[in-house]
Image 1: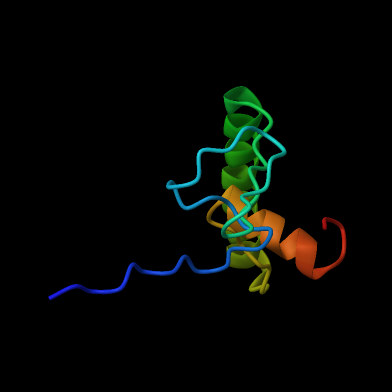
Image 2: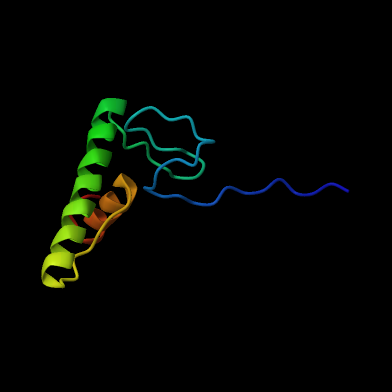
Length: 88
């Protein structure tokens, strides 16, 4: 039985799924994914910054019973920046 070849899901503006082999700044012609990573060092620094933000927000929430938002990945943080119009 021949099954149809699966169609790629659109990933417009999102990070590549791993099947796309993109260079920084490139967009996949098939699914629309974008490789945002400038280089591994910058990405690692962003991940560490997000980790520190999460720790600090959790600390302050515990201190004053606040409701600060925490982020668990650089992708999640960048998506939030897109939501508020700071990134395209």
